[in-house]
Image (cartoon, helix red, strand yellow):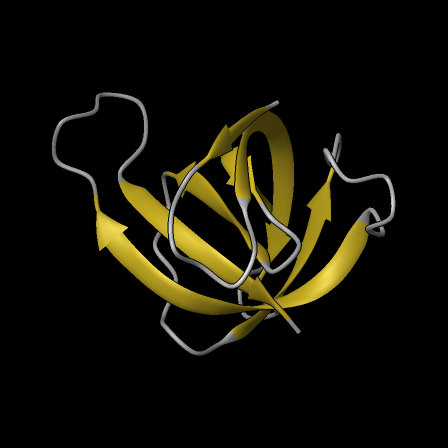
Length: 97
């Protein structure tokens, strides 16, 4: 795990893992790729965008912090379209509730 130095509430660490997102509105949950994590939230990339402010259930298959539960509720802090990628269309920041 490589630490990313920034001025944030908690330090972020580069860590890739599969996450499962359930927004409660879609018929099925979807898979996404987490790129970094902190004690405050995660960043992932996905084919699907999410509306800012909604709460989602997230399951992280391989969380870098063993003290965090595998499943939890989080709020969508931001969602941006990715332009220079061929695999995912959105970058999403989640903040744990």
